[in-house]
Length: 115
Image (cartoon, rainbow, N blue to C red):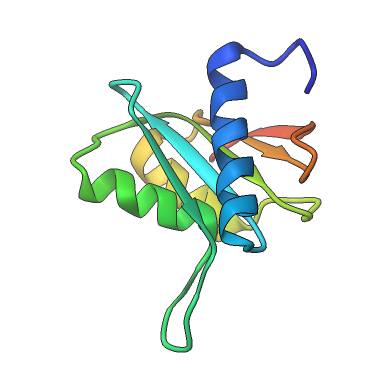
């Protein structure tokens, strides 16, 4: 992983990568809240419920009482982040919250603002 990535952001990329590998899902995600707590999730693909890993991680943060997000990371084969995922981060963290997209190897591909 690039040395230019902030250590705290590297941590959530690593957590997201681990969730993806451990659960054998399409993507893993991690978010860091205003207190520095992290929430990690994988893709939810049930017959009656489908959530991206990032939306699941945001939901976990909300359910745990987080009121803001500092950053989010997704590990995926995808080349871009879906608008609905960015919207979920923006809803809790604000439009300027950085969202990092890394490949399965953990290499950062892009960083976007949520909004």
